[in-house]
Length: 283
Ligand SMILES: NC(=O)c1ccc[n+]([C@@H]2O[C@H](COP(=O)([O-])OP(=O)(O)OC[C@H]3O[C@@H](n4cnc5c(N)ncnc54)[C@H](O)[C@@H]3O)[C@@H](O)[C@H]2O)c1
Image (cartoon, protein in one colour):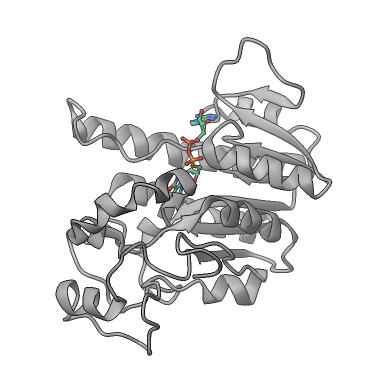
């Protein structure tokens, strides 16, 4: 199988390309980043333009769509303009990638949504229940999150109209070893993790999730959370809940450091089980 990985030069994209290569799959890295010497398998494209997306996906069997612009920097001079640019870039690129896949008759797209579609940073309203799961209402609070929620609506449209299979992976904050080294500083201020429930997911597990989603027998549009099994905090989950979210309904018993974002659905539908934790092993 030949897989186009959009955002293939980004942090997650490079890990996905390596994971797919390790499993014998050919990849095409699609990215807007200019490169002096273009490596084999690299196609430069700005996915905000439909024709460039159509050219970039020529001759591939499946797509992992990761290209996006992140949350605007809080020190941006005109934050409201940056917010609009983020929404427009991400929603447009996602439409263009799905449409280009349809043009080429590509039946399978795996793509990066985000935990933020469910409400983080919870400035407008707290969680409806915890742990967050796929039954939680979608209620984005930022233009970045809205661009991802819009992508999920676009996925339903393309599944309905073209019979495509589209799997949205709602990544938590993606981390690896270098990030884990900085955790002691984070523990000193536990409120810093409140915005996303002290959640994260390991980069290598994300790459495995993308590979499994490419193979999943799941017609239509699906969205699942990918989060580590534990929190980033050194404090027990019950203590965090009691301090920061005591008014929120908790739907079941929780382990000592168990995550407040459930990935159970990804386990059921994709066979994805997070294998890595900053605590070592499976958390
Ligand atoms: N990193 C996280 O913690 C996290 C969490 C949730 C979701 N996500 C999502 O995962 C995906 C990948 O994230 P990442 O951390 O690897 O980001 P990244 O910034 O490292 O990589 C994104 C890549 O997309 C490319 N890109 C951006 N706009 C493009 C365009 N118009 N056309 C073509 N290429 C373009 C960039 O050049 C870059 O190489 C994104 O969709 C992001 O929203 C990331």
